[in-house]
Image (cartoon, rainbow, N blue to C red; front, top):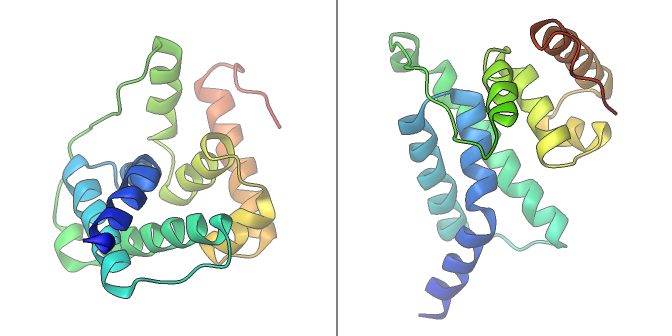
Length: 158
């Protein structure tokens, strides 16, 4: 019973993080829900030990990203047409920005999400995505340029 309580605590702690990353990368509620379940099933089965809270959070992000990659590369996914589904935000501006972020290529969406929504630094994103820092910086630059154009210059930060 103690393991169930621990799992429930971790689901409560990381549910939003895992779901939002999955939804941001896949743009499908059903796929995000499947990935969400798979992440926590793996956590339950493997029962990993972590050095710190940051290490634990990084594990959830890494597993979520890897699962979204697996789904994106699957033969089934290549034949499926996705519906346009969004997260509901408190303000119209937040909803508008998220709508534009969702039009970005997957890697651009992910780095924008991790930087602005989760507060990670470039070197941390680099480790989470297993990509060189230079690649992350290029993706951020390109994503910001697209966002600037789409939001009519209203996106300036960092």
